[in-house]
View (tube, rainbow, N blue to C red):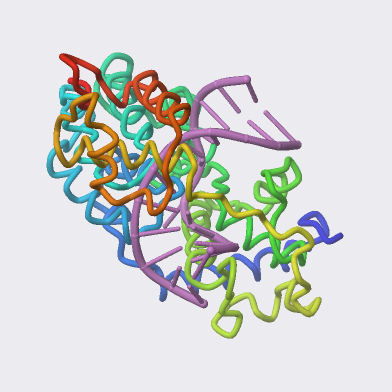
Length: 307
DNA sequence: AATTCGGGGTC
DNA sequence: GACCCAGAATT
């Protein structure tokens, strides 16, 4: 099983040059990559982009940055405003955590996004990936950035397999770290470039190998593009708690306030459940969960977004 | 290591 | 319809 340790320095440099040169030409012109984008703008983008495609983030990010240009602005907003602005990006707990992170930055970091990866990692909603990404993209600190795109590119190009393991392994992190260019500026650009390659060319389902700068170096291609050993199980959706929770949130977002006794009708009106009819246990479970998560408030016999 | 947590475009 | 997406937190 090929590993990075087996790549000669010359082979690694060839890898770097191919991807970086490709990035020079094909990088998308995204607003959070602009030279005048603030660290806060980068951080907001990284949170919004968690499990969410770029095209859906773009409009929400623009509105968000215009409304709350720095962490202190978001920290002062009401939860209702924040959840409304989050709109349909999904996983709305991210919005709550982003606001909590903003408050923490006001408290502990003078209202600014910290550059220290450990300080970033300590913020709500910021995991290993996001901490590394903000440090690298916003502050030029060459942390090893490993997201789903990087994992896929390295799994194919270096290890010669079709898809990465289900969960991020130490071996993957070790390989990604070993592959970081020594030069600081180059390393930061490498982080963005590999992600971009995974997003635009080395995609999960139909990779466009003909357009890939690594075609002649790719271990997966030279192995005949073998099928992945494990086909990842897709997430169920119809009938899940996630679907019902989302439908409840949509009903409250659209109406502002929903009588407790009218929740079922209001949610049905959003037409987000398809043919699914939740049973009483699921209604109870989901509503209690939303209240417990702080995504919903029950007051005067009605549900609304928290103040 | 496995689950939970949205939502919609795309194949 | 299944699949995938710049993951994090919890168990």
